[in-house]
Length: 97
Figure (cartoon, rainbow, N blue to C red):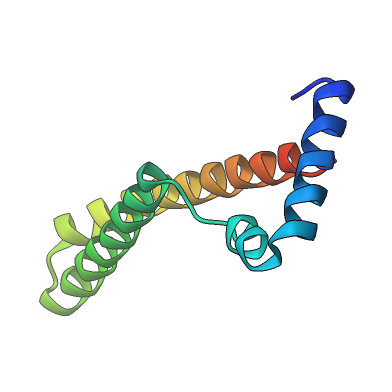
């Protein structure tokens, strides 16, 4: 978190930039996730697909092992999603004045 003086200086720079070049300022204001965050989101999607396949395969084939491992992995995915959402919410709160 930046001190009030630094935040007001940054806000003033943003206002001057928006007044001089609105298109550039609009481009900069668009939120883009960092590469590491995008990579983790892709990994989570792949993990979700894997767990879903484990559950379906375990149910359809009657293989208890696959089903139980998928069932054990599901809460971990819920925890990972909640952690990512909380971290994203903290970043958004830091960006606002």
